[in-house]
Image (cartoon, rainbow, N blue to C red; front, side, top):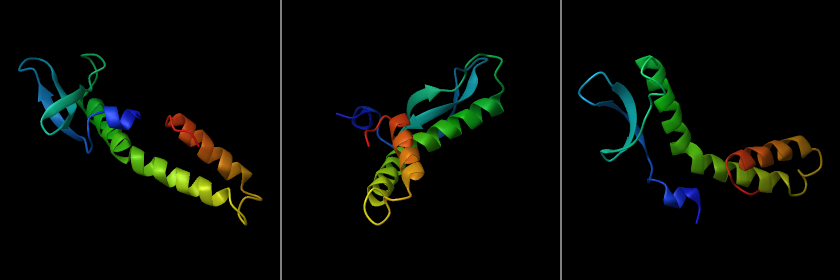
Length: 104
């Protein structure tokens, strides 16, 4: 079972979260369920937390599509007539898939 099937279903979105006191930070949500709150420390500016939450959300929401695209490109480049001369691109795709926790 992959991490995608164990994780909260996508798409995720960014929402404001507050504890009713001093803590008011962006959160990452799915259908009203808070998945994460982006506040590494109380001194972190709201805008930085907002940008971090947006980056995390975009990354998670696009992960499966990007992995599928990398696998398709790797398959295409690994087949004749493209295999010869595409070694660098093949290595880049394999490295990207490894970073994503996927096997090429």
